[in-house]
Image (cartoon, rainbow, N blue to C red; front, top):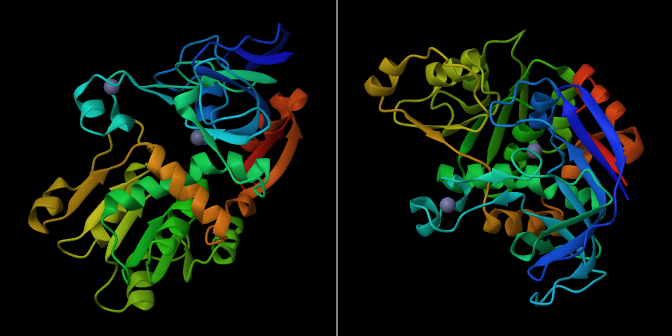
Amino acid sequence: MLEAVMVQPGQIEFREVPRPGVEKDHVLIEVKACGVCGSDLHVYHGKHPFTSYPVIQGHEFAGVVDAVGSDVEGIEPGRKVTVVPSLVCGRCYPCRHGRTNICDALKVMGFQAPGCHRNFFSVPADNVIPIPEELSFEAGAMVEPLAVGVHAVRRSGLKAGMKVLVLGAGPVGLLTMQAAKASGASEALIVDRVDFRLEVARKLGADHTINGDREAVAGAIRQAFGADGADLIFECVGLEATIETAVQVARKGTRIMVVGVVGGRPRISIGLLQDRELELVGTLMYMRPDFDQAIAWIAEGSVTPTELITARFPFTELPRAYREADEHPERNLKVMVLF
Ligand SMILES: [Zn+2]
Ligand SMILES: [Zn+2]
C-alpha cells in the first residue's frame, strides 16, 4: 500500500509499505476520503508548534472497516466509519473528569501521531465510530470539522432563540454557524473578508452576512439584530484584530467563544472584559458525543457540511491538494482527498 510522509515542511514523499496487521484492540480501516485542514497547512509551512517531522498527516477522514482485532466487539468488516483522531491518556485530571479533549497528554493523529494519509490505517477501536450507510465517505470526512463547531456550541450555553455573531466564514466558522442554528439559534450574522465564503454562508443558512473589509461590524449587528445586539459571539479566526472586534462589539454581560486557533500573544482590551462582565471562553476540538451529534445532524440533513467541498484530488496527487488549499483561499473552503 501507499503512504504519504511529510519529511519536512512542504515536502511530501510517497512510500510503498506493507499493509499493517491489526492489533487485538485495533480496527484496520481502508481510508476512502480525507479533508485538508487549516492545521495541516500550518504543518505544511513548518508553523505548527506541536508537530515534528517526518509526520504522516490526515485527521478528518472516513473509510471502510477491513479487519478487526480479536478483542473488538460491535464493529464488523464492511462497516462505514469515521474516527475521532484524538489519543488520550484516560488518567490525567481532565480525562478523569470527562474532559478528554483537554487531556494533559493529548496526541492527535496527523500531528503527534501518524495520520490517515495511507491506504490502510490501524486505529484503536475506541476511536472508531460507525456512520449510517447512506452517508457518503465525503460526508463522513466532514464529521470531524463539524464536531469542532458542535463542541463550541455545546460549551457556549447557547439557548433557543439566541441571536449569534460568527466572526470568520472559513470551514470552522461556517460549521459552527450551522451547529448554532441546528441548536436553536434564531438568527446568525457572519463576517468574513472573502465574498465567496459569504455566498456559501448564505447557502448554509446564515441570515445576515457582511464583508468586514467594507462594513463595520458594530453597525451591521445593530442593523441585523436591533439595539440589543448579539446574544453570543463565536470568534472563529484567531487573530488579534478579530478577537478585539469581538470584545468591542459584545453586549455587556455576554460570552465570546474563542474557537479559532490563536497564534502569538494578541493584545486585546482585557479592561473591557472586567468593566462589561464579558466572558472569553476557550474551546478545543471535541469529544465523542460531539461526533455523535454531528453524525445525527448530517444524517437528518439539518447540517450540510459537504457543501463546503470546493475541490477534490486523488490521494496520489496529495501535494496538489495541499497547494490548492494553501494558494487559493479565495476559491476554497474544504479540499477533499479521495482514495
Ligand atoms: Zn482539522
Ligand atoms: Zn488524559
